[in-house]
Image 1: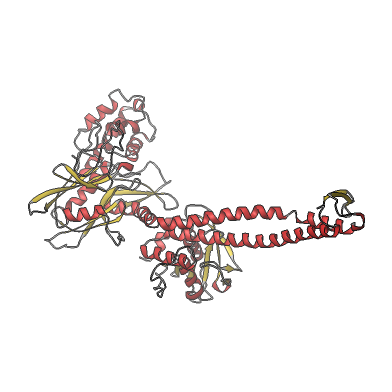
Image 2: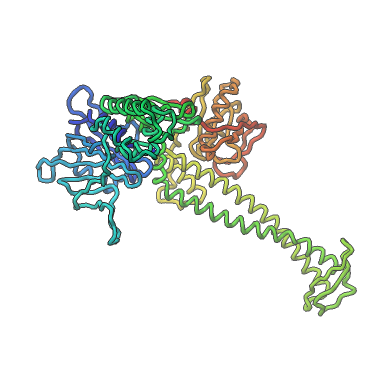
Length: 590
C-alpha cells in the first residue's frame, strides 16, 4: 500500500499547524529518510515536532512522527546540505498541486551573504521513483536520490541533479475531487467511455490521487460488489456513488477518522481516510484521529527494519558468506562419507587374500577366490610388486583409513551442522536488531567466535549488555525475551531461576523467552502468550503452526564448549503457534 494523494492531503492539513515554526534539527537516520524537527517560538506548546520524509520504494511517505530514530555517528552529505540551507529557517507554507502525491515545504531562510531566500523541500511520493529534493529559485540544490540519464540518448525521464532546473513530475489529465463538482465527476465516469469497465478501475482513471481501496469502497457502498461494471449500475446505485464521493470530499476538507486494516494475525494490510466495509469481518479495523499516527503505526516497524538492514549490511554479508562456505564444506564431507560406505569391501578382500596366501604368488595382478561370506566367487585386484601378505595388509590399511575417515567425517559434519545452527541464530538476531548498540553486541560476539577480525581497542572490558525485551502476560507474569545470543545465555543461565519457564521455537532460530513465575504456577493462557512471543521473535515470525518448546529452567543446560545461545533441554512440551502481532503489541510494556 502506497500513500495516495487524498491521504497526503489529510497529512498536509495536519502539518499545516506548524506553519510559522522554525527548523530546529535535521537528521538522516537512513539512506532514504530525513527527519526535520521544528519548534514554535511563541504560544504555550514549544515542544519540537518531528516530520519524517521518506523516499523508500515501499515506505515512501511524509508526516508528523512521534517515533524515535537512531542517527548515524556521521551525517551523510545530503543531511549536511539540508542543515546548511534549512537550519533556523521558518516554515511559511505547505503546498500540494490538487491531489498529486507531491508536497512542497517552503522555508524562509537566510543565505550565505545574509539575504532572505525561500528554500523548498519537496517530498515526491511515487513508489520506487520517490525522492526528497531541495530547490531554490527553481533549481535543484541537491536530492536524496540523484537521477541521471546514464549516457542514454533516448532517456525520456526527469533528471534530478544539482544546479539543473527542477521539473515537476508529469501529471495525468484527471479530475481533482476537492475542486470538481460531483456532477462533473459522475458525467466523466458514466458518460459512455467506461461502460464496459469495472467501476473501481474507471474511478481510478477519472479521479487523481485516490488509492484502489478508496475506489473499491465507493463501489461496494453503491453496489455491494467491488467488481461491479459501470454499465450495469442502476440510477439508485449511481446516486449512491455521488453520495459517497460527496461525503469523501467533506472528509478531506473537514477532517476524518482514519482506518487501519489488520488481518487475523495482526499484520497491517491497508489504510484509508474513509470507513472501510468491503472486507466485512475478514479484516479488523483500528481507528485513528490523526493521519500521522496511523502512518507511524503502519510504516514504523517495517521502516525501522529497513534502516537496520542497511546498517547491518556488512554483518549480513560476513555471516552469509560463512554460512555458504560451511554449507559447501558439509556437502563435500557428505560425499566423502558416502564413499566410506565401501570400506567393508576392502576388509573382505583382505580377509580372502589372507586366508588364501598359500595359493597366491608375488607377481600376480588378480585372483579369483571364493567369498566365504556369500559363497560366491570374487575377483580381487592384486599389486604385482607386493607379496600376498603385503596385498592383504594393503587392503586392511585401506579399510582402517576409511573407517577412521567415517568417524572423523561424521564428527565434522555434526560440528558443521551445529555451526550452521549458530550462524542461523546470528542471522535471526541481526534481522531483529532495533539499534546500533544491538548490532555492536552482535559484532563483538562474532569477533569472540572468530568470524570477524578483532579491532583496535576491542580487548577492553565488554560494556554492559542491553536489557532484554520486557512483556507482561494478561495474568501479570513478567516475560523476558532475549535480543541476541549473548543475551539469551545471560537470560537463561544467569537471570532466570530454576522454577521459571523457558521457551524457544523448536528447530528454528529465535530468542530465549523466560516467564518469571516467582514460585507460582502460570496458567495455560500465560504459557500461550509467552509462546506467542517466542514464535514472533524467531525466524518463524511470518509462518503458521510454529512449534514452540517449553520446560522449567532447571531442565535447560549449556554443553561445554557450546557457542553462545546454544543449549540442550529435557522434560519439554510443545505448542504450535501462529504468531499474532496484535497479541505481541498488547503484551509489550511501554
